[in-house]
Length: 227
Image (cartoon, rainbow, N blue to C red; front, side):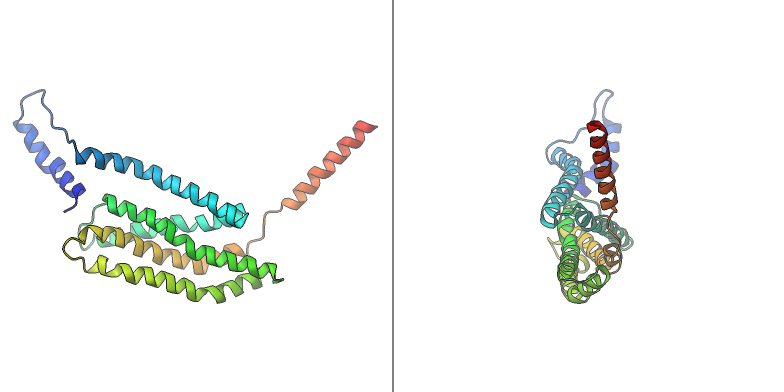
């Protein structure tokens, strides 16, 4: 039993019974580990957001493109949805609470799911630099990177399967973490191999006509001022 599960039992079962025996004006409060656990839960959302922002800055510096960085980050919501779906499926067979280690699994998942998208995007941009058009570069990237993507995804999934399916004594607390990583990696792999190529084939934003219009406007304004 994790600390969170023990705390929930105290609050939901033991707490109300103790309060019935106490005189008026006396209350029960939880201190020590309970306080630290609540503080950790409240900070976990901020840590997830901070991790996403730092990752976006690193990707933008590496790709020199906000568009490609956004494409990579779009793997995160689907990965988190896969982790939540895997937890809901696990709860059909056993009781798996959203404890601190399970939430840490989501943070680990953010760092894992971007690898496949980065491989695909970098190979696509390399093909375009070598003279291929956009569609051909995407097709070549999928052909060259599908095996590494399968290898990294299956390695992560099968490495975590024993913790999810056969948790031993002392390792049961990692069952939620393993479930989140397995579900998130599986769903993000589908996104990388099917949705990401479609997104990479989208035409870039039409910025050149806008820049040309702004330049022409500036020239006409300067000519009027000279006249």
